[in-house]
Image (cartoon, rainbow, N blue to C red):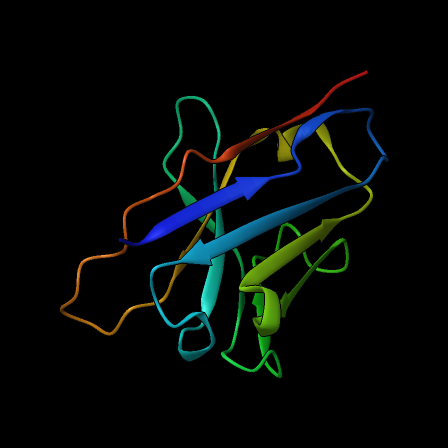
Length: 119
């Protein structure tokens, strides 16, 4: 059974940092590119950052470029999101998921982890 579990969120002041983790199980983690998403209240889920299967290629939303870094450790079935210089507009629930081929439904979403940036 596929399971995805995000952790590491919390309350942080503007300018602060957080490191999120996402552990995947029930599938061959190293075979899938992974993507971080976020969903703010009243908004649709949006892509934040993605990473290729071996970690050699990454991509970021314009709004987080230069502040967030995505990485992965396939030996631990874990993908990370290092978030620096956090802004109030980064407040959201953060999720990750595997990038499945077109025509396949995404794996079941985890519960996400809440990030709140506020003074």
